[in-house]
Image 1 (cartoon, rainbow, N blue to C red):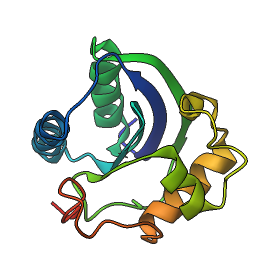
Image 2: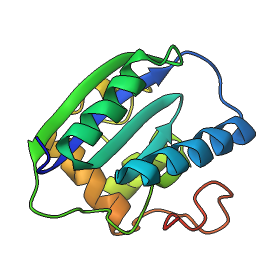
Image 3: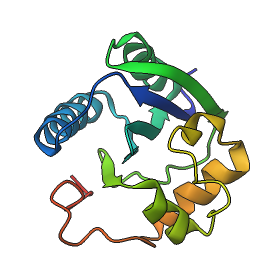
Length: 153
């Protein structure tokens, strides 16, 4: 299972997260992921997480197992788990954005879907890929967002 894969999941935070706390989580995640060759992106949307992990299959599975066991996550739902030919976020140890669901809806054209703050665990593969494309193509603001600055770290 050392072929490249990506795993996309959603979860809900068990605690309210301040900007400082999110920054700490992101810093540690970037360090941990870089150390095992995992790249990806993380969105924090109204208390929920949407994350892509990509890299060697065994490493991605190990990182995801740690996340699934983390008591700060609940309602962990795997959306996509599949082999990939190349990384979509290879230059990022962990791209990041912290946004409100209305911002995501406007940026992705999914206004009909992002009306419920807990909707991330209901994303299907098609909508998940649409959300990824919007993030990758920078269809929403990142300038001025302290946590989204330089997602290429």
